[in-house]
Length: 243
Figure (spheres, one colour):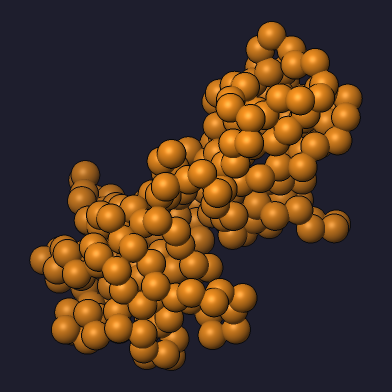
């Protein structure tokens, strides 16, 4: 029996999220099919972060156990049979019992924002076009309030399976290059829609519709209705996972 780690990139635009669902095209479904084709036996993948429909990944990690004989270059074999919008960037045998999900110490996400009056065909599906006012200092002040342990009830759907709403944020920042701004956040774990709800609420602050103080108060466990809209998925990327 061998435990295998896969490092992945994918364009989430063509997938209905990570988790396999009957009749829907998902990252897990496509990747398990590719692994099954190469190894000639079914596998069940464990993943570091279950991305939603439309969310991209630059550094996703999955793992599985198998008794099959592995090809010399598993990543190349998988890319040869898998779809074009999903790539295995590395594949390696790791220590027995390794779990992409349970052994992860933190996950990092990036949300990209095109902040200019005109849209860009090159950023379509890659960044949220935001032709409105952007107060960079306000965005940075919101990000500065995030590191530490907070209750993020206001930033996840009311109907949820989560039982713990506190998360430990290790780092958060906004930076920019040209017209593209990027919000980066690293935490021990994330709740459903958490990053997108944070971004949607911070954009209300950046456009003058909400104060930084109001945003900060939401980190003490306010209701979901007290926070802002959930930003669209196409600007979000799972950037990396730390072990």
